[in-house]
Image (cartoon, rainbow, N blue to C red; front, side, top):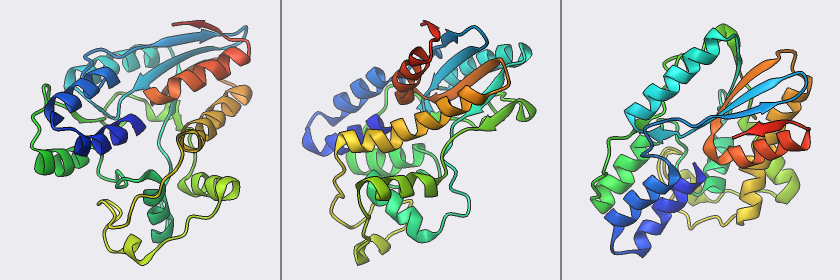
Length: 242
């Protein structure tokens, strides 16, 4: 959802905020009514990649649900996305917020829309949007799925080991991690952000595929991960039907 965060940050720079946000949401696919699919085949595995939006229209999630049901009936094993933050301490969560440059989406992304866009900028959205439903609500079978993602500790350890320590200031503790920080922005270059949020997590998925015993896999990951995952599969000899 990095594009969504960037979009919100741009609102303060433009007077035509209503047009900017609605156009951006259309480009990002948040207003889509149908879910896309990519199919990758090797000599031993078939992989279906379902790029998702963490915000979307009800009709989009209805279509995604139908696709999940079809894949489940065909005995696909599902990889789900969610950075595992259960039990993460307060300091770790605040470092993550500083790295993100935005509130931690503990209550979903819609509350960020409501609190920042609705109250601060008074923008009317062209379509109804909701947070991505839970995987259970989308029809992902518990006994045919697994969260294949990084833990928050792994993510922050990777950043600090590779790029340097995140030092917290007193202002980092003045608000809830679910709210905007009072600190000035912690600037992370785009290539570094992509390496941590995209490449590091994509590699976890790809390495798991390398040792996976199931021969039919459905990957439910945010759409921004799609180019990296498809390229990783191509590098492994998969034929891509997009």
